[in-house]
Image (cartoon, rainbow, N blue to C red):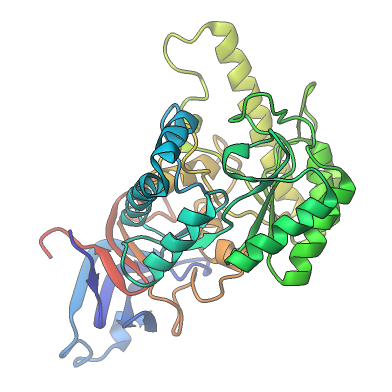
Length: 418
């Protein structure tokens, strides 16, 4: 299953969906030269000599669509039940051990059909060299957008690999350092998080003035800001400051879920996307694992139901959505993102259609993450392409059956027998 650079290739399939259209093209094709798509259309328009001297992959019964964009990952975390313990053990062994973990994760992601990831928390010494290694073709994987070290308070969420900043001035310095060192995004841990003992995920870690300092410095340097925010106060501070994306965005308090429709309207008005890091694994576990005590199962189910209601309300308000799985944290594997999309769909999910969920992981994600060269199958775009068995626009579960994956023109997964 080795990688292969595609110099010229014609791929035909029963359906070709460009990432935006209401319906796929039937009996369509995509032509690729090097790293770029050069043509997309109907097979009938190719002409009799179209495939002459051009390698041709025909995929009957399959759907071609843009490669997936996972908008929230942590590429040096294990995705096991104990990712922080794993991380600390590997960090003691050095950056090379963390890089090995990240390389494995990136390969797993790309072979599942993910051709771009946005990493929102990995030490700079791993994140930036690996981003370059993938871009240079030295490591198989999706293109990496990297924030590097997140900004957090002393002892705050993810402090073990973050910049410890306790004043507005320190926050500004951290933003400058991250931009100097090559960050594509700035990541601010505005609230605490469940992974970090003794940090409070239901209260802000930073004042409104400190959040504004981060947003102003990011804006001045032209680097977008992603904000980790669970509680309503943190979410509103991020919106008021002008964050580009809000991660998790649960509106969770000590009293339960407290959705704020005014904040949601502001998000829609300002085009601030939320990233509902819902896992397919958690989706399947919503009735709790066998043997879980009934009161615990009931609390889990109630909380998940309320969280899904929050996301439905955000969608109804018109807030943009970017699909992201938080890969690397417990029960979030890097090859699980296609299955995670099912947790966005239908009454059991957050009310999206299959097409809306796929757009949130392709064209919509690319638009809101500022990467205009991918997410859509069109001439001049990167050859980031996924082929799956069946029709995921009708049945989202088909997205977990990849048969061809190209990332920047490199074929990392080929059909059986090819």
